[in-house]
Length: 196
Image (spheres, rainbow, N blue to C red):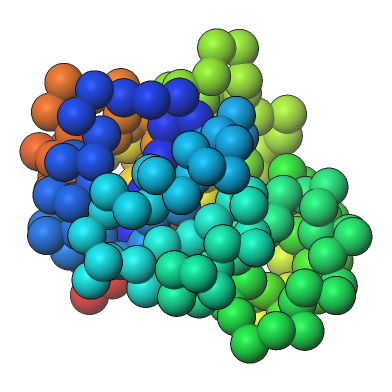
């Protein structure tokens, strides 16, 4: 299970992030589109060093070497212009918004988000343009893991796995919750039950 940071700052965010890792979070995508490079450096410095191998950078990719981060995420647009950086020995992920786009993702991407699966929790008026469960039946790319994003919460995780997704990513269900850690543990328990 993957968690993506809220794009804007959240109260007590670093403590929550450290607690998520203590509870077994495997990957945290740092998506802070408005952060300057200096703000990104300060943000990463606050996260405990032992969790840096579990971080994925969405921007300021040049910082991966400074922090020993091994994972880089490319937006849909950036993916098409990113071949030179992808020659480095890193693990890559990307974003897609249709099954056609997902099927066209090159083999050097470990996984790709496919979104939105459900109505977004964090973005107003952001909802699926098509039924991605139906669309997933025409999946031809089986080398890249497909990760469900958009409106994922404890109520629909099981259904999402049953309809062919390899994993889920959480954003709004964590950061819009009064108790993000409790919500994460509930979702984690459901994910584990789906993996058995």
